[in-house]
Length: 125
Image (cartoon, rainbow, N blue to C red):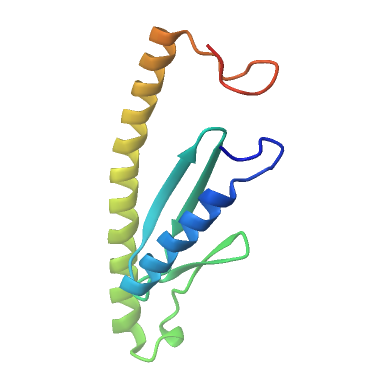
């Protein structure tokens, strides 16, 4: 287990960097959450080459002008359609995963009488 005085987990940072490299290598999007005791790490990657979305710092940007694309309006329209498809799938699948995790978390908390907000900030039984 990592040092609890750290604000992040080096193990999770390393694992997430490897996952990001896989997404880049295969030119795919993803919404990923990793966990180890006391820590979580997330990645929201929505900038494969088929997407018109990207992050600039913490700001989401959308490249939606025909002039931004060598193929003009046709290329722009395809990128917008592909981006919409990507966000739809991430949203639908993410919602299903979230709902499942919320229900599982509630059941485990009720069965095990866990407290996520103890005085030390750690989950306790």
